[in-house]
Structure formats: structure tokens, C-alpha cells
Image 1 (spheres, chains in turn red, yellow):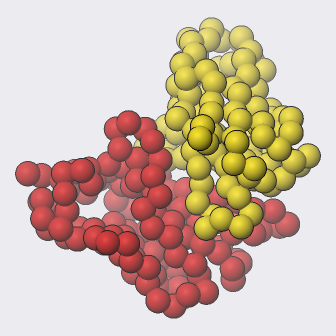
Image 2 (tube, chains in turn orange, green):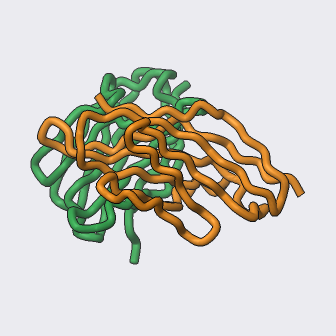
Amino acid sequence: AQTVTQSQPEMSVQEAETVTLSCTYDTSESDYYLFWYKQPPSRQMILVIRQEAYKQQNATENRFSVNFQKAAKSFSLKISDSQLGDAAMYFCALWDYTSGTYKYIFGTGTRLKVLA
Amino acid sequence: NAGVTQTPKFQVLKTGQSMTLQCAQDMNHNSMYWYRQDPGMGLRLIYYSASEGTTDKGEVPNGYNVSRLNKREFSLRLESAAPSQTSVYFCASIGWLAVRELFFGEGSRLTVL
């Protein structure tokens, strides 16, 4: 069965500093995708970044980048130059094709606080 | 462009009552999902539908039923609501050829007394 684990319930970072959120996952499939989603207080879910498992190069989106370690099944999110608007819940997610169907599984989330 | 629409946004039920959460998407997506979000538990998959005519159980299906009425609509039914089903419910959809981004509804807050 697929699992996604986020071991940091809460993290804090000073404005303009860098923070890394951790995520580990498990799947028996070779073809899968990993994602980070952001959920601000508005409750809206926003895709931050995605990584295809077959790509060795780590994905980057402006101030957001990932460290994808396939053998270790680790997928961390680095936020550089943190801004007050980055404060939110961050969810790691796994999508793969298992047992003849697609599943999209989320971790328990990390609440990020940005300190002015 | 409405995206994913969920109704109702808020609902209060008494234990034992039934209700249906409606979800519709206008993006011609094949796969649709229902999640519940609870503090400290993240988003847990209740049921999903990979395509029209198919439904499968997710991580926490007990106490729920679903119907994929057509390609657009995927409803979630609570037959006999329990206080443990107090939660925020999200419907989401994903296209076959998309970047596999999930498109979420705004969520439905359900309270069972």
C-alpha cells in the first residue's frame, strides 16, 4: 500500500530565511508522481511543485525546490527567501497506478509559520 | 470557469441523519476523489472514481457510499451520520493527460451533533 509520511507537524522560519519540509513515501510502483500542495487559511488547495519519478533532475519553481532521493524514498521541499505569504499548511502527496487504478494519497501535513 | 463545485458548503446534522454531498466538475476530467480533512490527520481518501462507471474504496470508506452519476458528477452519501464524521470534506478531480494536478472544490464543513 502507498504511504506518505510527514514527520514535522509544525515548522517556523524567519522571513527571508530558508526552510526545508520533509516527506518520505512508499510505493511499489516504478512510475509515480510526487507533489507538494499548500493550504492557506482560506482552505484552498494550491499546487506548489511536482516531480515525476522517472526524472532525475530535481524540480524547481521560483523560490520552491525539491530534493528528490528516489532510492531513499524521500521528497523534501525547500522554500528560499521565505515570505509572510508562505505561511500555510503544506501537504506532500503521491500519485501512482496501483492494482489497476489510480490513487492520490496525502501526508498529514506540516504547518509552516513565518516570523517577521 | 467554475472548476470543481461542491454543495453544500456547511451542514449540521444530528446523529443518525443522512445526507449527500454533491460534487460536479466542468473540466471533462476522468478521475474524481473524495477526501476528509481532520486536524493532525491530513487529507484521507474516502472513495475515488478512476473513470465514469467505476468507484473504489480509499483509506477510510466505512460509513460512506458514493455514486459516479456521470462524468461530471461524483456524490458522497452518509447514510447514518455519526459524530466521528464531523470533518471538512473535499472533492477533487484530475485529468488523464494533465500534469496530474488535483483540482479541488472549496470544501464542505460537516458537523454531526
